[in-house]
Image (tube, rainbow, N blue to C red; front, top):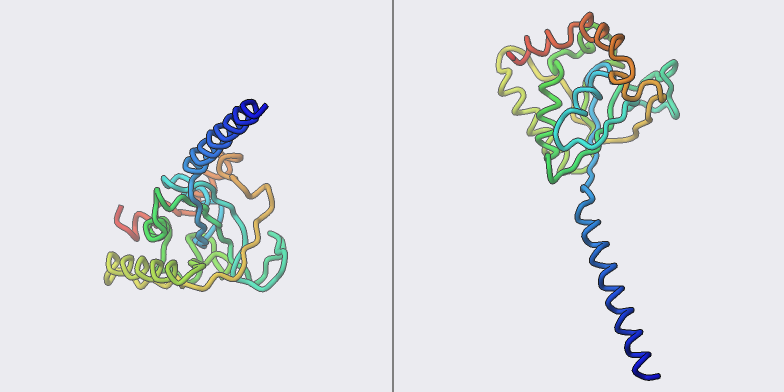
Length: 200
């Protein structure tokens, strides 16, 4: 009986060890996640552009920067069209992601972006920690250095307050409605202006 008990305990110990090792492996394979918040004009375009950046896990279109609770597309007064970016910091740093963001917008335009005018289409970066703020400010300084006398970077770096996801039909809009999206993007002159600003 004692031998049987010892054998059962030994088997149980091996099973627990194997399970914990499996769990450790699974945990090691799970990507780390951090979050960034950006506004760069039409959230369809910012979502589409940043979703293609290596290391980005997910991008959600929404509204930020205002005080209205549960804003909608029909009523988001005070808010700016924005995106929430979930990324793996082991693949791309927050600073590198912010550098990528700057190169996909016109940070010299304080009145909107491209054909979309008004505060709801202005640019912004919201940071969630002192480290993010420092990195965002460094990225802004670097962007200004590249632009030089061609323009002043007006994109503000702000403390994060809140983000509200947009309605479902706005999510992954470029993939769901490629023809309408491409017509909008082309007619709005986004890509041409970005090339003009950044020289590429």
